[in-house]
Amino acid sequence: MLYVLRDDNNQVCAVSEKPLSNEWQQAGMDDESLMLFLHNNPEISTGIMASSDADFIRVLEDVIDLLIDKQIIQFTEFPDAVQAKLLHRRRYRESLRSNADTTKLLEDGDDSIF
Image (cartoon, rainbow, N blue to C red; front, side):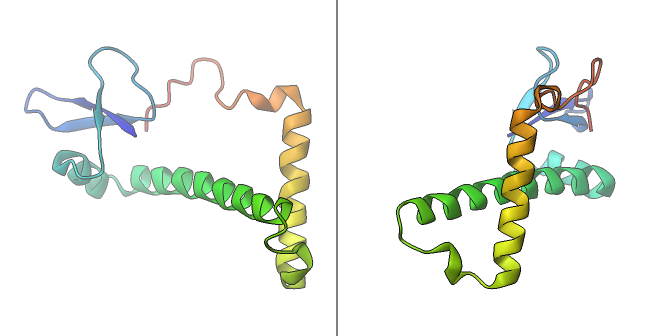
């Protein structure tokens, strides 16, 4: 879900992944004003899609791990290139979990405005 800040004409003037004050409102992707704002600001739209894609990739990795754990599929059934990518991603995610400094995704003072 995205949060938007609206101007005096009720048009979206800023987008965030979290509300930054009481003025921020939730907005769905069916909000015409939000869609117009994203259309007029393609760099923001690209950032939102990249974030969404990254979240979706993590979901897919978790589903694959679950299917393997439940022995519905076997890891070796994947092509070699897929196995290598999955192993690389798994190692990378494990290294992030073990490094306490990387759990903080935003820098101090970063208020997540796109």
